[in-house]
Image (cartoon, rainbow, N blue to C red; front, side, top):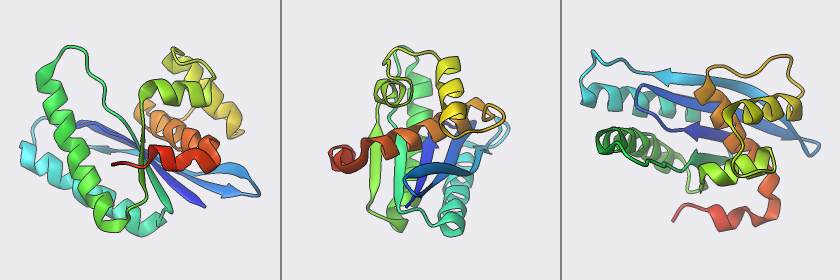
Length: 164
């Protein structure tokens, strides 16, 4: 099984690909789609769509996992990140209907065992679980890998998290 995890963002959209071999998760790749503020919004969204499409073509995941968005205050940020998520989601929907989503709290609980874990705890546990020499960078890529690990750890219950 191959899982693509995505941590949505407009400036930095993290991604991580895991293979499950002999019931063990193995990191294939992790990175980020980067857009810059000097690009117009539609250019940024197109780049996200095109880069995610390229990832799907290259890695051919069986399942695709998104971290659900959570915003407390900034409406402008929520709208632009939501647009970025929609752009990535559109590329994924053209590729597969096996698209899942987990809240940040579910991902923290799935990787660390504690729903209020901080970023460093998630990064450290991700490193340990995958037996990596270093923490995954950038942070957004580490978050995407954590989402993919959460999905793997969900096992047969994954259908509960299928995006509606």
